[in-house]
Image (cartoon, rainbow, N blue to C red; front, side, top):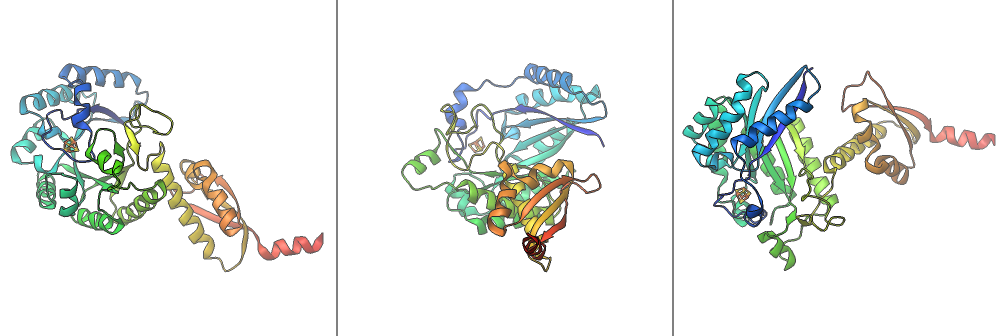
Length: 356
Ligand code: SF4
């Protein structure tokens, strides 16, 4: 299987005319340098030197919100710089992310010309009331139109949604997931809302009109969405914002742009840990005995999720079910799966006591 590499190029949409309440783009735009085609060439060359595996698939990803909202000449210059690497067979494809209302036939034609393969839409919610509340300035209808057009023109469609938006609850988020699944995206990103410095949401948070999700709530909500998307065979490629110098733990780093909300540096691992815990407990409950000790077999990639962040799953099994668990790698088990062997049941335990 080819090793997948992504070359991320952050293209802040400096001229974004929107003012989403959770976004700090307006306040930080003075601090961000505009990305030029020269930057694109340098970033790509830099990353290419660090990729060791020869059997590989490399993608240039223009991240940062609203690629197709950038002025057409600048957009084309950036695409051209990236496309040069495709022509030289050094890179395999390009992906971009943008807003649903910044998609039309002309914009897609330009992306097609430079062999863009994946388009991710920042949807956030499919509830128009919630979209309005956070001043997204687009509707679910825009999402439907853009998604259909993207797929019809042969691009791979991706969606990004948020949990914990103002006035949004767990049911709204499941509704969003269901609405989006009908539009048949291949990939999904889920971001819990963080309160960033300099945003309207910060003011709402400080005056008490917005209460962010706790870390536990965000993990639970994201977990339910992951279950749903798995059932629908939609690949969740990210859960939680990427940690950077500025998106970091606000309790440890005073320069963090985050001032509140469910931030965790390994947020996805918390969600995977929780999914693994449910999986283990469901399997144990199927045995009609009082389990005292188990051996959990899983693939090497999944061991950390089964054990859990800071051994969370092992400790919870002991605390809530009085079960001792040992986790072992098994190369025959498919990644993500687990197998449970009961190594001691409650009656064995009593027998041992009898022998003392
Ligand atoms: S989230 Fe995107 S569309 Fe909204 S203000 Fe920020 S950059 Fe603009």
